[in-house]
Each structure stands twice: as C-alpha cells, then as structure tokens.
Length: 434
Image (tube, rainbow, N blue to C red; front, side):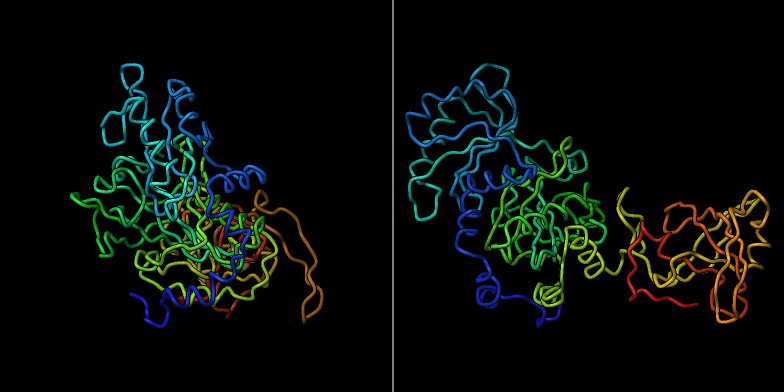
C-alpha cells in the first residue's frame, strides 16, 4: 500500500477539495436529470432517456410495453446506487422482462418499483422523487467473462482538469449487476498511462483473482481508454464549478464511453483499488496550467504511469510510455531487424543515425536516401543525407526520417527526435543506461 502520508482522508477531502465545488454545480451533479441536461447541452455521450415519471398517474399512463430492449429504472435524486433496477431484455411473453440475474419482472413489478422511487424510498432524506428510465448500455465483449449480471463502469477522479486516478468497477453476483463497491462489486485500480488494471479490492480487501475463479484481476486492457480520459476531463472544462469530482463512465460495445453519473463527493475506496494515495497526486497537478483536454490527458499519463507501463504493449491506438534510453529494432537493407540502443531526445526535432551504422546496415543505398540538407554546427556548415529508417519501438512500427552524422564516441548510435515520437510518452524516470 502507499505511504500513509499520501492517503487522502475524509476530513482532508472535505476541507481542501469538496469546497471547490460551487453550489450550482453540486446541484447539477446531485440530480440525474440536471446531469442529463448538462451532458446533452455539451454533446457528451450518455444513455438515452426513455421516460421520466413523477406521479402515480404518469406511472399508470406510461406505455411499459414500448420498452422493447434493455433498460434501467433509477431515482433521479438517488444516493449510493440504491433503487436502481437493471433490466436485461424482454422475456418470451409480452409484458415480462428478464433481469440481469435471470429473474423475471412484469408490468406490475415495474410500476411498483417506479412508485417506490416517486414516494422517496431511495432519495436523499426520503423526499418525493422521480423515476428515470433510460436505455441500458450493452456490455463490451471485453468484460463478458469477468462481470456477473451487469455492465462494469470506470470511475475517474478529476482535479484541475486532469484525471488523477481511475478504477474499473465490476459487478458480481453479490452486487446483483450493480457496480457499487458497498453492495459487493469489485474495484480494480487502473494505470492511467495504459488503461490496464493493476490491483483490486473486494469489500476493502485486496484480491488477486475474481471471486470463485482463477482469472487474474490485473492485466485487463480497458477499451477506448483515451476517450474515457478525454470525456472525464472535458466535463470540468464545461463545468468549472466542479473543482474536484468523480465521473462514472460505461463502455457501450458499439457507442464507446457513456457518462452515467457525475459525483461531487466521490468515495475514497479508489485509493485501496489502486494501492496508492490521492493526496500526493492532487498535489502534483495543483497549479499546472491545462489549456485543453489533450494536454490534460498527456499530463495524466506522464505523471501517473505505473511502473510496469513501459513494458506493456498496451491497447491499440494508445500511446506507449517509454524511457529516455530504449532499444529500437531497425530493418536493414537486407536481412532481419537489428537491435540498436537509442536516446529519445525531445530537444532534437529530427532523428539522427551514426554514419558507420547506417553504412553497415545498407541504409545509404539510393532507395533509402530521401534528400540531402545543409546543417549548421559548431564546426560550420555540414551537408548530411536524410534517410528513411523502418523501425520498431515497444511493438510500434514506424518510419523515421533520420539525418546521417558521425556519432563516434557518443553513448548511442542513434537519436530519436520529437518528430518521430508522436506515438509515445516519455517518462524521464525510466532511464536505463547500459
């Protein structure tokens, strides 16, 4: 577990962070309908609303048989995941539906549940409420083998526009298809750089396998990871009155990330799932100028990459985290790829390769030379060839335009400049010199 000094406690959260949330923004987060209006206004993907019922008469008049697919009934002002009924699909006979656990409900059951919600059974302070019916997000195939009776969601904590911590919440048989940890769901920590799960907790106890199985909790690559982080950050750009919040995002197999809830008082169990504290992370991003969503995601990935992140291939389309010195695999003019130690230098715009190495690999033949350029150096003007080099780094194949120069006596035979590093994130802590 993390150093105790890094753990964010309830008192510190209330004193230093929850106070950053303005009254109107808290009101939006606390109401599912106001949240829906906010998401719709800024075109942030969210599940479609199928009905909104505020009285017993509206419950009776609603056309329940029009619900011809999976749906969810929930209280507009509910708290802690209570009062949520998840319906998988229509059953064989009209007027019946299957629940996620295989049970059946009829029109009478749905009406009874909706009326319970309206009467305030699940609302804050037991005040009258409204029943919201929305289309159920269909589980992504990635999670079919690990989730029981429901669809997992991703909880992301955002501060200063930067996603600072995330966890995957996986429903279990005990939680009856819901992703609430207090009801028995599993919380899996997520590496922000790659979107891959790391640790997990069940009832605040660390676990290594999903209950009753030999399936490991770590190593699950969350789909659409970049979009998940972008969506979380974008909410704060559009609602700056939320200075510190959590957002819950479902991953629809067809439509990608869908926001289901914004929480202005997110719980602290996410620290247990990640085996690290929030306090230190919040301090690291405080005061950083974040101009856009893209920078917010870059900062999150660079600052909060797990130690293993530079060793994994990651999710297709996601950027790899690399160190300052890495081994690249160059394709010579003929034969198999050759491993070469390279320095990744964002201070250099263009890549460069040692002339002797380029000659040895046959890369100075006419088909590899793109053009020649004149460069200025401390020794005056120098004419260099620019060649195209086919290479692989961390499983990513790309073609670099490298200038040919004399690197005799230098630590590496090649430099990768920032022009060829667009698909990577450099973590200066990962300096491994041979």
